[in-house]
Image (cartoon, rainbow, N blue to C red; front, top):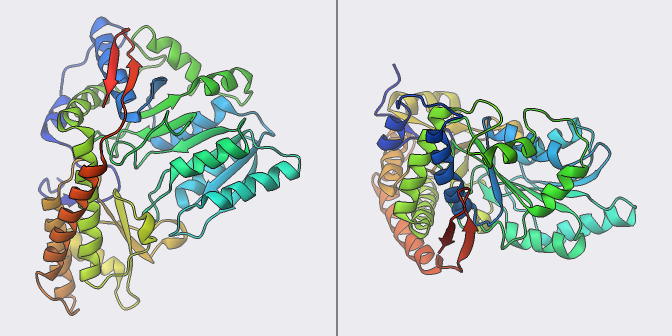
Length: 413
């Protein structure tokens, strides 16, 4: 049996709060009955508030990658010119899905560890237009989990809107939405994808997508094949409080509870908590002698990537961490063996980050590496306090009215 006291610090699946775990054991209900319809009437408006959108939000029983595929096949046709802005392994994955279904994909590849720059996007769009290939869609990654970089989606979207106003904006927000400030409607995004197992503190099994009116219109024209991932079928079923296919009912129970916990805490507090955990992780790892991989100006508050020192055997070190109760993630793609990643999203506190850093410190000392015992915890605590205070001051924003599935009006602060 897995060690239930272990520290799981990977970028998803993330640990679960006790009420969310308990909800997974609830007795089944008829997914075509009134109980499930009532659940959907709570969950969909709550997700709208999390996405900051007045548009439709649909739930699909799948992984985050399934959500990316749904975004592609519902809104594009084979041969459509597409600009894919990729800053890491998951940006590459989004582009590969579009290519696999026959889209004519142009890659704007950014050096891993750095964020996409608006002017580079503007240049790529202009080059496509000059070549007679004005893009039908632009694929963006909000938080690149493989590198620990958060892309500036607002400025990137503004450039797309100004340079190629007809292009759809499809955004992978799987590992950032719900943990850091995000504004679907304010940024003019057409399709935004997230996954239950990340910031939402729920097990894997659900992708949640927001779809703008522009995207629904594009879906009527798109000819890529889809059946299970047909979002129109999901929208029509949602109007009846259901889903077109059998949903993961227990995961839906858990999402309902998790959203309640998040709203009880309040999004400003959630953002401040993640900023504090991100700052603590980065400061603590630096104090322990690790070089961080991401550009500091765009370092993620949900996952931190650190370089593996040349003289450190990562496999042996990782095994020692697991033996001490801490699980971290290795590198992905071309970063395999070169970096390790610390997840700090969802159900996470600064105290838990400090506990993880203490384990890393002990393992380093056991490996014979020089360590100033306790210094990393002091540096992490101070960084967390500064970050939380800064985000709390900036967290207030305008209200958004959203109409729930049952017809009520919700207000987002």
